[in-house]
Image 1 (cartoon, one colour):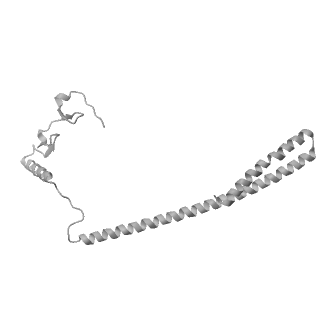
Image 2 (cartoon, rainbow, N blue to C red):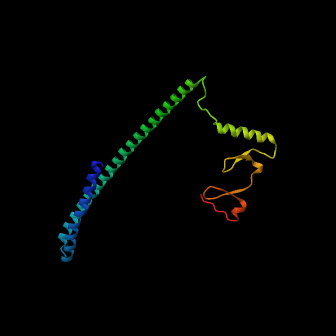
Image 3 (cartoon, rainbow, N blue to C red):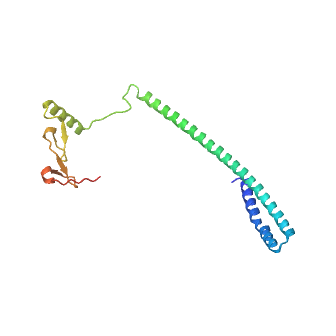
Length: 177
């Protein structure tokens, strides 16, 4: 918090609290019909009131300065973050270019390897696809046995993950996600 802000807030609060004394004196003087004392009390009240507003203006000025300083700090932080991101992006681009240069002529950066199981499935799939239109590819059930899609019938899975034929499942269907 800026010094002007603190000084302004404390000064304004103090002067507003000090207004209570002349106000109390004014009320007592009014009950006694003492106009001279009432005028003096009003004078003091006016002075304290003016001082309170001067301190308020000082506090407002201090808060503006606080806001300006905060804005400058935030702007500076944003610029630093932008600069850091630019540097990181440049470093990443340099690394990518180096990797491309290293891998140029060798093998590509991304590679795909097919496992032995995948190769077997691919062979079975191509064999069943060539066999005829009734066997339109291969599908796997819970037992992980390959069989043509034409032979597949609807099945239900129990909560334990076991396959149940449609006759056993009945009309009840429950799903949980």
